[in-house]
Length: 500
Image (tube, rainbow, N blue to C red):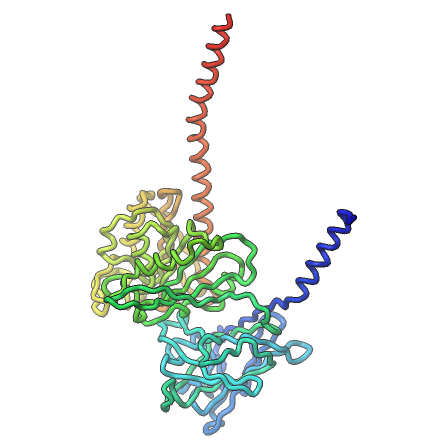
């Protein structure tokens, strides 16, 4: 007979044996947007924990000038000084190698981000060389800023997947042809890189590409979106945060290394949809019904307990911020929104939201694309409320305190005037932030993580909402309980009278 102690030991041995079969990869993220610029280097070294990534250039025709450089807000490139010559072009290659104090380190699952104003476009290619094998990869849609840059991983490869390649170094070179096989002027800058230590097999899928069918202008169209799961999942269900890109972008534009780190803290599941023709239909930008698209994406999670559809949030930039605003005004599906560099359009201001949401609105007072004071914007063909009026409108919708509390904050290198409308329905808040000196790109500097700030707000809001729910349940139960108790006592009293 197996005793309880022996049984526990047997279970432990089985567990250890099972775990030993898996190699859980550690992901290293390297940021190529430095606090200070450095030009004309024969090599550059970037660190992540105890690991060092060395980057060195080579060039066929311009070796004298093809020296690697890193520049603030620009990323990694090839140039000898701060001249306008910057891009990594067709005759230049960057070599990457990973090491620690003991020497070369093996890695796999390479992914990198290319910067917004000089990345691979969808009709261009580049070549990644690893283990004497060359992989041709494709670019994507142009982003609005570095925060919405293009993520390039093995999903972008042409008929190949380099994720499982195990090596200590690799090279990256622009191709001389586009996806049609014709000559291309491919070039790029790199602003971020991630690798997994060791092998990735068997791996936990963290980024999943999905599609749903939608009828647009009489044609069935496959709408794409990506789902980013926490790397290690310890919860039975997670809040869902949608990230809506700016005009001209695509879903993965919004997924950057700090955001991946935030998701990997086991905080939430991120969803990154792409707009139809790279735009969200907030005020006639396309023929797509993007409210329906949002509902279709949510429906695709039905039956999966990992997705907590009672806690759904939306964060967007520019045109994507407009999409977040519209969803909050026209559906009751959201718990909170984080519109960045866009306030409500005037027609949205006239709509009463069907349910209260928490609002974290961010605007730059130097924004010339969607000015903080609002008004008619010609290239969009729409009129915006002022940022202040937009926040006031949310507060009025949710019966918040009429006067906002204000304070001054520091976000990175910029000063922020923050206004909070409290005591809203469901104990929610409306917050409006005017960032001094910030333009439409909302580059805050100083390592400040805006997504982390917004998510911290959302979490605190949900805690406040749950507390008010609990507080409201007590008096409801009490008001039902007292009459019930009185009836019981009356019944007992009548029985005593009958007995007498």
